[in-house]
Length: 267
Image (cartoon, rainbow, N blue to C red; front, side):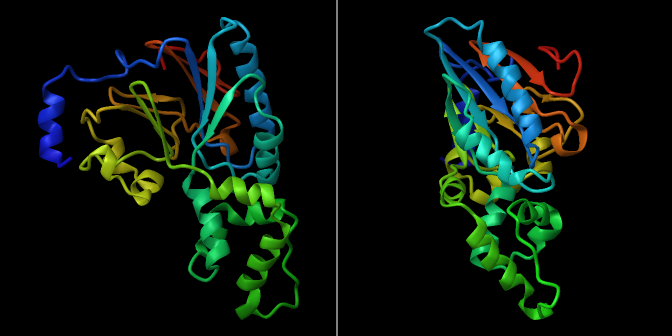
């Protein structure tokens, strides 16, 4: 739908904001921000979520939506994937979205020369977590290829299948879940992977009604950031020890966090 047509369509209905957005009845959603190699915090947040979900009605559907960037920077990247695959929240459905760091791992496997920058932005910690080491006598011009080959050998088949199967978005009720955000100058059905994985300022500064309230990570804030049209929950876990979850039920919202005291509905 062209942008001007979308604006006219949205103008015909009340503005959708976080204060009126809803998820379907009988559902509680826990969205989880960027983990970045902190399996310790993921396990701690899982404990908080499980304890919180224990008060839900028995028939209530429980859904965990992970916003991507499972790896890099923190030293437990491999363990994070193991936790997600082998220690899921009991009684939950799970949606795992793709983050730009997860995407760059796959790009490095495909073409290490073009994607060498990934190593400088946290990929070195991921490679280390899979036990990959670079031989000291390797020729400089061959090092990237050696790292890629050794990472391919070390990456369990289940982990590779996990990374390659990650979707870019998930929609439910009045919410769109995505790693980075959306391009406010495009309709939701015209967003590109680059938009969804990498966008920052144009999205963060926009006051547009997107047609959905966007729940995202990617851009670090000290506390969860709630705007009329979006909710950001990347609280910089690998640096701050604060891994955050947004809890949605009906038209209510609140937060759980491993490292932010007094967090709740007003954040």
